[in-house]
Length: 428
Ligand code: AMP
Image (cartoon, rainbow, N blue to C red; front, side, top):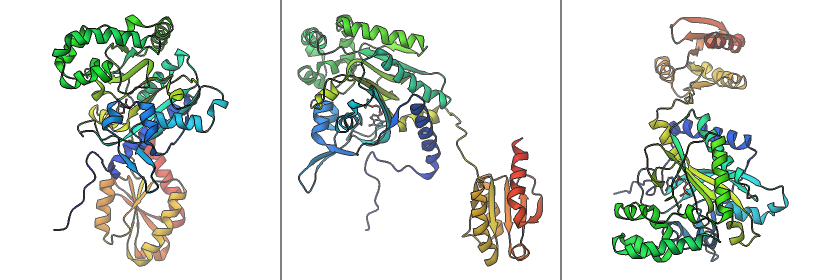
């Protein structure tokens, strides 16, 4: 038996009928990011494995369990990027962007890879769009990056229904103290934790706070909260961020259990979560401040803030909410042809129509007019042009109004103007 291939587990084709959604969100992301002076950056899909180990953290789920890693023939250890922030910071350092005016504002859109158990909203290859403001610690930037996410939603006609869940994770000064008091609390309760959280106690105790197991969640409720133990600088920073969000009227909810999965976060962390849904699994995006990352990658101390969001989750959300983007593009005219000469002249006419920015559909490989009219109908073109053998000989063409079925004969050289005139009329 010959094997029938399928796409790898958790990885999907984006079929032509889906592309309208992708095109639309790409346009909107470009528009919003550029309006706020973020410039596009594309970093490689493969990076040195050590970049992610050092940047994201060796004890994180992403690095420990979820990387697609390989060794090249030349002996380099590379990994498919599980996220883009580490790569963007590597590029910031490699291209001496510190010499530029700070913050350097960058955005990206591209595929990421995580070896996860595929399920709804969790893929092994997924697309993230995201932005980073690198080189400034002003709290206004934390609010501004959130504002851009809402600007994207707004352009996609999503006016409400998504909240920012927000927390602060403190910094090098205050987090170790907090960790101590959290550990002291959790050690006493250890017997009640799930198996994974027992390991987390040793390696990454903050992650116990966002464990999905009910018994851990119950224990987490009574745990000390980091916002009560922030140092003055982190406290003021967080207070300022919340004030800016208030000013922008962005909907936020304090979530003291939000810790995020990656080690590089400091101070503000947030997720964009649809109302009525819980946890990172449902988040449309998430991010925060990572004031240590550039330093961890060998650069100078460089504060930064950003977020990343999943394109598939956004598209699923738009579909679920039945949001009509008006993105389904219909041809303005269908060009039907009959006979050798009709086909030849149609090829040239198609180019002429296209040069005049008209959206034209055709089915040149079909020879029956009936079949071609059926396609024109299915595509919803308001007009069809029919160029048969007789018309081609006389340099004429038939215009058929697809709604009324009325047909008129016009001179071939006049058809572009005539179609434009008729399209204008139906737009009025
Ligand atoms: P993270 O980098 O884990 O904070 O993810 C940021 C956003 O990317 C999430 O809120 C999701 O929208 C999206 N995302 C993360 N992991 C996946 C995945 N495995 N499949 C689909 N989308 C994902």
